[in-house]
Picture 1: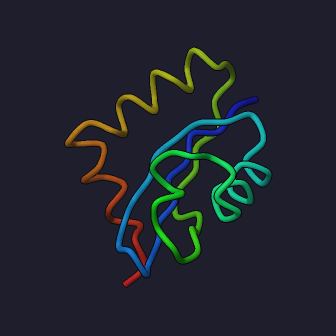
Picture 2: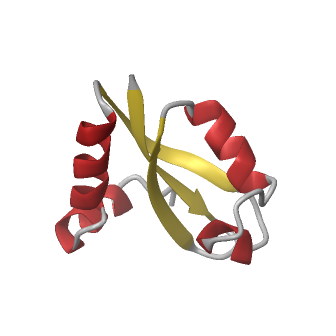
Length: 82
C-alpha cells in the first residue's frame, strides 16, 4: 500500500505533492527537514491536506505526476485550509 499526499506550509504558503509507503513517517521527516530538498527550504510546519491510497509504487508515481500537473494542482488547492 502506498500513499500519494499533499502537504501545505501555512507560514510559507507553499504546497508539496509526493508519494510514500509510510505517510506518518514521511510527514515527520518533512517537518524535521531531513530532506535537503524543496520542503527543507521553508520554516514552519507542513500539514497534511490531502491523501490517496494506491496499491503499488507504479500507481503512486503515476498519480503523483497527475497531481503535479496544472489541473492536479488546481484540484489539490481546494483542500488548502482557509
